[in-house]
Length: 116
Image 1 (cartoon, rainbow, N blue to C red):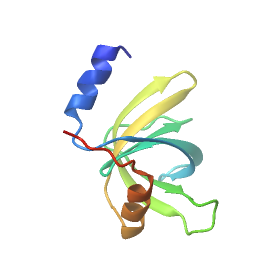
Image 2: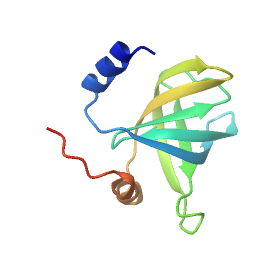
Image 3: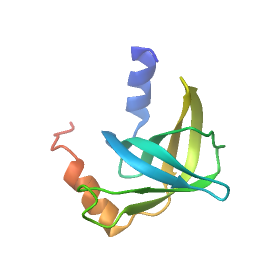
Image 4: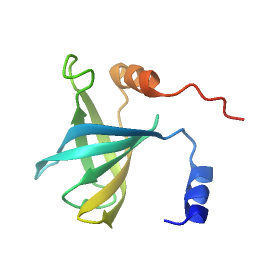
């Protein structure tokens, strides 16, 4: 993706996107597969998947944090985009449910940034 397209995408975003590398499990009506959450925001999630999903699909993403000490965070995600990247698919989605646990987790990983 070119720098111009990247900047345009960031300008359209309403919420700060935080890069992550979280092992996760995706559950859908037909599949349960391992995925990697590569970015999070207050309202959205980006992850890599071995299987494609269509815009409008709803999936559940589950991931642990703090080295499996805490109960996993479970997110219901509405798929907004899917594109092939090398041998995987990059899926972007909006979070349909934000638990208090997710909000606390997101706050703990969000850097303190002064956005002007």
